[in-house]
Amino acid sequence: MKRIITTLLLVASIISLADTTSAQGISISSKGLFYNNDGNRESLSVCTLVRRDKQKGAWVLGSASMIPFFELGWNVMSTPDYSIYNGSDGNFFDLNNWKSTQVTINLLNASIRSRSHKVGLDMALGIRANNYRLSGDTSFTRVDGLVTPFEIEGSTKKSKFNVASLHIPVEFWVGRPSKIAFGFGGYVDMVMNSHTKIKFTGGKKHKEHNYPVNFIQAGVTARIKVKGISIYGSYNPTSLFKTGRGPEMQQWSFGIGIW
Image 1: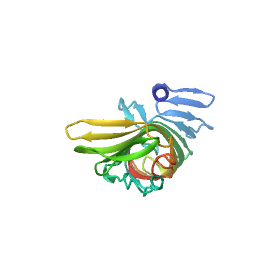
Image 2: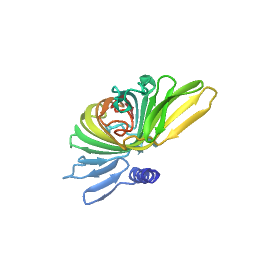
Image 3: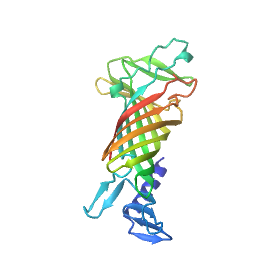
Image 4: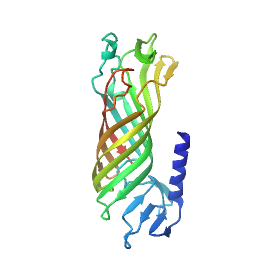
């Protein structure tokens, strides 16, 4: 994962810092990569979200993309199906929804746009962390590959479950992203890590890694953007845990994006 991110950041830096050049109708500048069609330099752009503004003399975040640099959302799970437990383990994946957050940072962005810049397709590559805050003094562990709950002994401050993923969104949009636009698309998250975390009163912590979550988490997203802020909603029909290894449930997420 580190090699992938390092390579992408290197490509982003080269695109951002390159002086304007041209060859066979393609030009690269500090604003991105463009394809010239009969003198029209608006057909294709591949841009990083962070670019050099020559007038301001500083690095700035671009706002023309529909996919934001930073997203903060809240997770809501569908009613879990505990049928594999034969009803013996109760409702252990009960969340505090206001403390169950989704944080996304999109590091690299690519855009394909019409000549009028009113229709486009955006893609990005980023990192996403889903945090599920468990209610009460409960957590879970793995027993013979099965996610198995238990009651936490001792005084606790919080109990949660975290999933970190490589995030790849693709969104089609209409409007003007620099002013107002509407987008719809999908995403694929490739899970890199998952762990439970228990924080006890007094500062002691306990973590357990590598739970049987589905490696691919895919879903759909709808978004409205007004200048530098967007509101999004997404639905992930993929169950969080692998079939037969944990409760079956799907995820809804709602939040804001900032450039």
